[in-house]
Image (cartoon, rainbow, N blue to C red; front, top):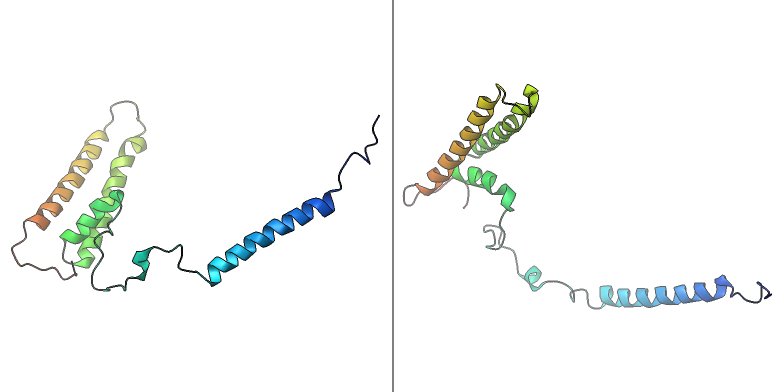
Amino acid sequence: MKDPQRDTVAFTPYATIKDVFGLSVFLILYAWLVFYVPNYLLDADNSVPANPLATPAHVVPEWYLLPFYAMLRAIPSKLWGVVIMGSAIVVLAVHSLARPLAGQVGEYSTARPIAFSSGSLSRSALASATSARRNRPRGWRSSRAS
């Protein structure tokens, strides 16, 4: 039978030195990257001076925010735009909670007309807001920078 003490390698000098060497190589490369070539990994667009009066063309809202963005853009007053946006959220909440709150999720319930009317109301509000944006007179400007 072999002697277990003579058959093993001590952990401390070998693994510790290997780990310290690997960490020091990583830190040297990281320090070189941070202190000598900090712009090496940056995008070239980050070096272009910003224009605070214009939004870049490639900046667009996410798809799930587009209806709210259209509501805010369609109404010239910021306050009324926020009110319409908040009412759309309330209508969607009523629409989604009408049947579960009635207690008859699987069956036809009396809350169905409420849910149907709130859904048609939100669709008609969105359609009128987007058509109002499209049908503005030529040369019409909103109070907000477009």
